[in-house]
Amino acid sequence: MKPLVPLLGLTALLSACGTGLIPPVTQNLPDINATLTSATAGTPMVIYPKTNQFDSSSPLAGSVNSVTISGTLVYTGLGNLSGVGVYVRENSIGCIDGGTFVTCTGDESANKIQDLSISKGTPVSVSLSGKQLTAAVQRKSGLLGFQVTSGSSLNGDKINITDVKAVVRF
Image (cartoon, rainbow, N blue to C red; front, side):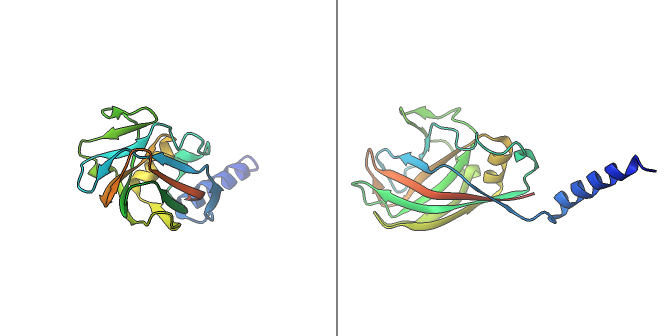
């Protein structure tokens, strides 16, 4: 009977993982920085940094049920960008290399997380979540990108998300 005691503990722990009994875990993440190219609203192009933003995920990433990433977004530059769509994709296959970024001009609708209203130089609190984001964390592979939905950006404009935190639920 004694050999079953450790197995019962493990079974209880695994059961708790699947039922949400384990409290959410908050983890600080590196800032997310994107340098934009010239684009206007309606241009079917998503701009992604080339760097995998999820490779430093926890070894338990495959056990994640959902993730929410929050932070403070600031847009700077010479454009008049006032709205962006936020996207996440696994890799840059099929995209065009732009140096420090890639642009994807195909149908990216399956990769869309949400739309955000922004104002140049004004910090905006953001909270990103969705199945695409959770999948990127689980795979430890993903690029977080932006599409102009309102206004326009010019070469060298930047979107920075600072104080990035991930709330992970198992």
